[in-house]
Every structure is written in structure tokens, then in C-alpha cells.
Length: 64
Image: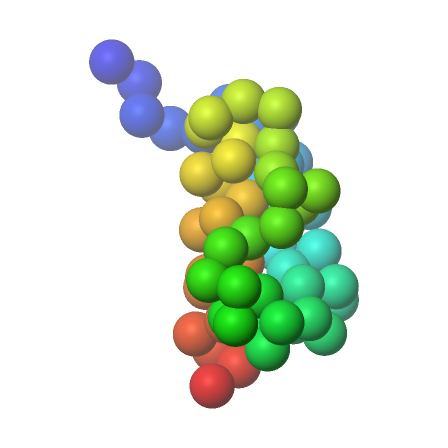
């Protein structure tokens, strides 16, 4: 089983990281209060959703 990200998944990861830095962190307190990632930030597959959530959480940890 290959656990490496595909090129498409790497692109999703990169895009999610950039989005987290520029957009999500501007709404960080609102997201933290709601204790949920807004649905409009989700991906199209479970793997993409996990990649996006991971990048958002990584940015949130570095912002503290």
C-alpha cells in the first residue's frame, strides 16, 4: 500500500496550507468558538478533507 500523497493530493495540501494562512487565520477566533471548520472549507473527498483540516490545524498551532 502506497501511503505517499499523489500529485493531486500534494496540490490540495499546498493550496490548503496557503488558504489556511491567508483566509482561515483571519477567522480563527470565530472558528475556535464554533469548535468546527466551516463546511465551505471542505474538500471533495475524505482524504482531501483530512489534508485541508491538517493544514488548517498546523497553521493554528503556529499562530499561537
